[in-house]
View 1 (cartoon, rainbow, N blue to C red):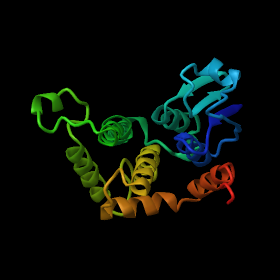
View 2: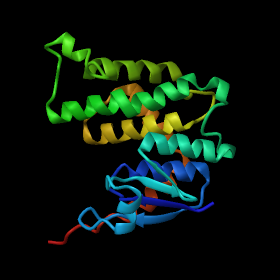
View 3: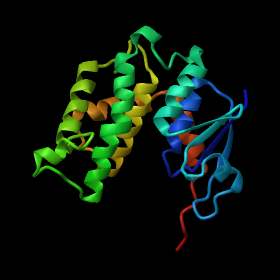
Length: 208
């Protein structure tokens, strides 16, 4: 099965690479230059957004979709619970893709509906604090385990990636439960392999 990952090391493409490493998949990489996006890439994803994967001609975009797709495509990796036990798995995978990302992005952009409860009702995340508190409760409830099963799944990967990014750049508050969860997911061998491969593609710092 041929997989091509279109990515950039300074992007959400790191999440897709991590998922590929967890899945044990073999894949080729096309590094996308923001200023000169290759025609072949725009041909499969006219949005021009990374990550994008192409798996035997099937195009998958959006990080959460890629994680869920790879979990199903490579069942031996056990990145998804059994079909009849996926409630929490889908909940937290798409909580991170929807409310969490919206809440973090809105705050970064200076958008807030905190003064108007009716407008909060129009937003998928309501408000930032409630979103973060809800996720913290879930991570605390997992304890030293995982969010959706008795083993690591794509939901842990995707939530962990968001928390890792948010703690690093200060867009998510550094709460003890988040710090511990990030340490646990980033300590995985697949995460370390993925980070090393992406770090190797980072541009060299300018001299002088």
